[in-house]
Length: 122
Image (cartoon, rainbow, N blue to C red; front, top):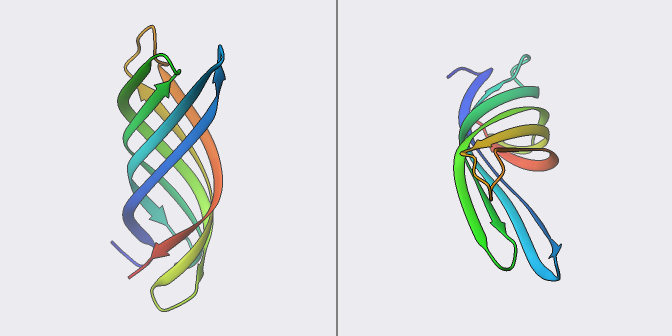
């Protein structure tokens, strides 16, 4: 779009494994977002926001439920250029997901993540 404003993809997955009533249980949330990234100084620090498809998987060991919905993302980070168009990023993101409600699935979820990433900037 411009040197300071980029359009891209942000994908994420979080998972938790544990036991419920002696059964192995698994929860996983996936996000597939279109994201807008703004670099106020055209490099280094950036903020971003986005939205798109989210889905959740809940496997209690006796029953498996899946649901899809919409999610949003807000985040900030720093891009360190390591080659001409290649950057290593240090990012803090927060996302919230909304699902169609039922008695066996949650209406919403949210998580915050800090991570290293990769960004290609042309």
